[in-house]
Image (spheres, one colour):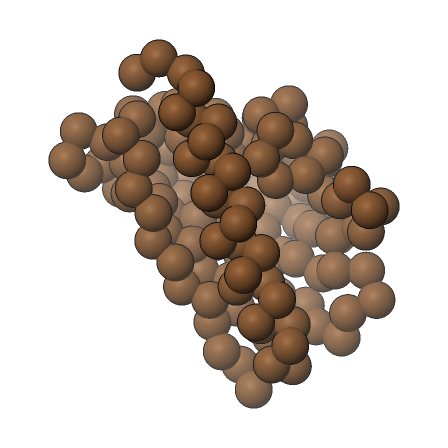
Length: 132
């Protein structure tokens, strides 16, 4: 099994603002999880959930304001996966595309799919609190 989560979102905000929420640890913590992320290829970092679940990651690719990818391994889960964020300017805003691949168990795929939807909706709520 190797399904991919593919989700697309639209924000009526400039790419630069959406990019900041994907790459600044203090902003990531507001909608995703606490982390020691740095936008440097090869940087190993960890997302930590409020329940103290660890997600071990490594930055694989950075194209400022366009693309960000990192590996993703959840504590005690049997898969190594990859998260890719792609930003596209569209209709006076930003289209944000998410592809999360590498799942080996349907439950992991389903859980992460629902989780990403919830988390990115949280990002939308954060973005809606700032002035455009």
